[in-house]
Image (cartoon, rainbow, N blue to C red; front, top):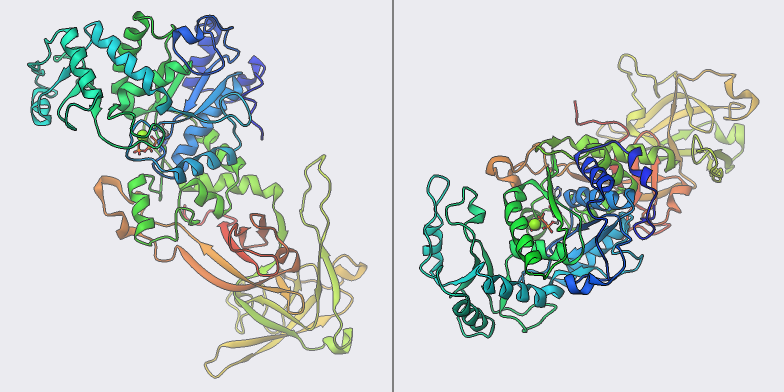
Length: 603
Ligand code: ATP
Ligand code: MG
């Protein structure tokens, strides 16, 4: 799918998707023309920058603003699909912006992985297919100017209380705050002091710049929040230019405004910050620094997925303590992990759409995510046969009826139903000889009630090949079956006139010993056995599922052995598998189980 963020879509397009409160807000704003007067100079900037520019061609602007301090996970994927999806559907543009105002936490490894993840999910940003992402740190100069403007207008002051005094004087839900002794400084005094902060004349932590709002506000976030702090740290973008850095709550609304964002969508925990968001932008519009109308913040419930943790800190712990092989371990809920597991961008977009957006927290069952992958792969993934727990089956009359050493070519379609308008893929070619691999569970010397597969005297079809009749087995000293034996019934080959001449109770999957290829198959399961592994401060490591990875050595049919890395298949009867992106090589196959054919956890 290509994002049409740079080619405004038809207005009706949004109406074809199930509605939600955000779509209603946007449709209302578009109908009212709330943002129609905005101008856009082609790049982010202040009021003067945009003033004489043409009207903004983007009908709305949304943004995805990750902090480059970790790998993105399935929760971020929800936010990405939401923000980029809304922009696409309403003729807008979504911005990818690195929220890199915190100098200590960034890493280019994370920047690159975030860019890859958004691209992989199918989106482009900032109005052009290869546009550079925006960086919040590019706005430091403006943020500094904005801070001085607040000071000049009496809306901010330098506070030199100790952090303990500040905390004590902030009050709490039942007690109003107490004014700082520094609160009544004049704008001129504050400006001098703030410049001293900027010029490195004060120690780290010796002072902060605070907004002057109301120490008795019922919303504690409005009790003169800190907006700038002193922190001597080298920033990856601005180096040592600054020793003061803006606080997130100050920086974020400004970033949105400079970028002409219309709908700033975030998770519910920021709801209490919204009054400050609005306060700040109103003050900066009054000061003439930013153009009206201001962006608005809207909150939605974050994704909580059962059997999954999404805290970056805890995910890092899994990686650092070697509980998983890395950020891209196929059991990780990271986008790189999901990708390696076999998830497709379409399945994740479908998931995001299906769970929708709401204003109240809830848990989504993991099987919803799995169901979306099945739904996407069902029509697309080529079929193939693989034997995961192999035992040899010998057709003891082969030489007699088919000829010694003969290999009989067989074929099956790659897809059972080719979607209309799509070319039919080439059929799979494989062959049968005297020996084939079958699943160990497909033979029982003494069949349990209702068992329809191989047992002495029973007939089954080897899928795509012949009907055979089981005659018995060989066992080793421990009693383990080492070989199953059967007789081939000639003239029953699938697709020939005699195919229906002999009734078989079941068809079983198999792989020829002659042309099957041995494969490493990684059977992944959920990483945790507790549906809410870290709820209520639980030790999430205690519920690690010890069976979340089982590696088996099996056999796959030739078409599977030729898979390209990252190619997905349905292994008949076993589920959906992907050729591992890193370790698979044609001829030396390595497959990951993405998801089983049916939900086996709900029960
Ligand atoms: P941190 O705790 O480090 O801030 P974060 O998960 O909030 O982690 P950010 O990089 O700040 O990470 O997130 C980028 C965007 O993704 C934010 O707008 C945030 O609201 C959104 N987001 C993060 N987690 C989820 C989630 N579980 N569901 C939906 N959106 C999420
Ligand atoms: Mg965050």
